[in-house]
Image 1 (cartoon, rainbow, N blue to C red):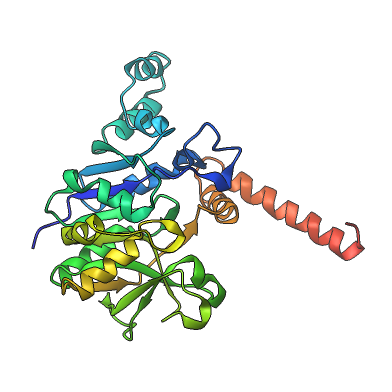
Image 2 (image 1 turned 90 degrees about the horizontal axis):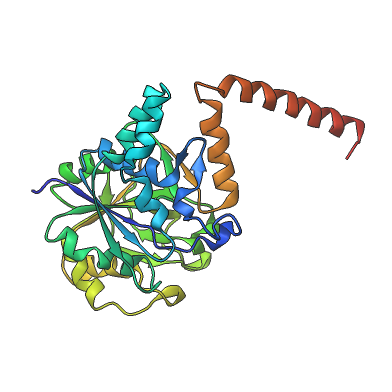
Length: 302
């Protein structure tokens, strides 16, 4: 069984839900406190032992490339100003992993984005991380999934979590009976089902460990739900057409859906409150603000 060395990051999306903030800025570069979303995801992969990162990019994503590149002039300036710690942090970001960039020339969905990375991934099992899903976990979600992959003898893994009944139509949903253990077999998947016909309430979220066989059905895929090439359809084919095992993995941790404004703000609050530099100050502010709002509610002031 081959180890997981490579991770694919589909980052070609336009980020329209965050306009106008993303008009001239990659959505993956939106900061949560003092780090962009994409860095949290790459750090998670690197902590799991992954050393080769593949960014599937599109137009307007140059800032991601710049973020993980060296800029010697800035590092020299920081050192000249006596800011050794900032220079160290800067250098660590640039040296984090071996990075490759692949272009997704058409916005044809997640399945197509993964397929674009096929020549870099080759015949190795690999991870896929969607930076919109910021997962607060220790060890990280991908490290947990890597352990489940090894324990299962090499079965592909999709991270899942329970979602509200009305929310299933926004997710790929797994069809499974077993819901115990580190991971458990999946019979099939349905992309964005109506609540009345959803096979379960377990939604697939943005972490995967996949067999390279998945590139076979992706190479022949037709557009599915939303007019896009769905990774979910290829995973279904992995089970039914290629006889490979696919497991659902209920990760341990808290997921923040930073593809939504509400989820992004919740992540800001959570990570801000625990920040060593100003977490205490923010906690005090929020306590005072809540008292003010409660006082207004009691007095009937809008």
